[in-house]
Length: 308
Image (tube, rainbow, N blue to C red; front, side, top):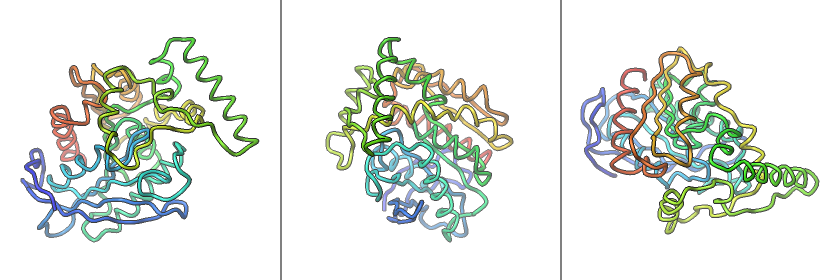
């Protein structure tokens, strides 16, 4: 059990305690690990929200705090690890962006079957690349009534290009293509330091290292296949299919890892109802911790109250 006064903006009144329950469900025949967060003392059913991890993230990194906040506000929240990440089974360290969408749909299916959940009131919430996953899943799954993307990526190729010098981007793409061609023949992808693929700015690199230092299961290397798969994944192309369901995009003008243009482009392509929130001065990883996350959750709770 955890407690905290994060109920502001909830349509259910102020709750202070949540119950946490480890769960297990399947996607593509692979067992996924999750944590279910339930508002304590609730009578009847409540809307459910699935939370999606970032690029190399796991549920124990940032998401559990956000899930507790949602639960304290009256929602049933499910944070989970994708196939091959954290405590889930499957081939390790695969990006597999479309596989993550499938995992997210499995999480929605599992959540809808919980006795505490109103099965036709489901939402998605994703941070960083998880925002991209949430947007794509919402676009193809009509069960999702409202989606929140926090510093998400709209176009993988544009994102990788924007944060690099032209020659750096060309070299990365060429390296990724060589690896992809070799993988088709050998079945294996070369491992690279995650910073080679993510191209952190100095502040983001420092904060990412701090957050992962003592976290079991946090990946420091990733397969180079990430490059090819990132280039091919473009949630911006399908975001318009979410409407008339609701889309909230949150970004920060201080984010130098995923530039604000990514959220802006998805917002522009989306249909109504939609909203774009731009925080001031926060770096990428600063958005996921106080005080910025307090602003993010206030916007999120207001959005879900109106549309979920």
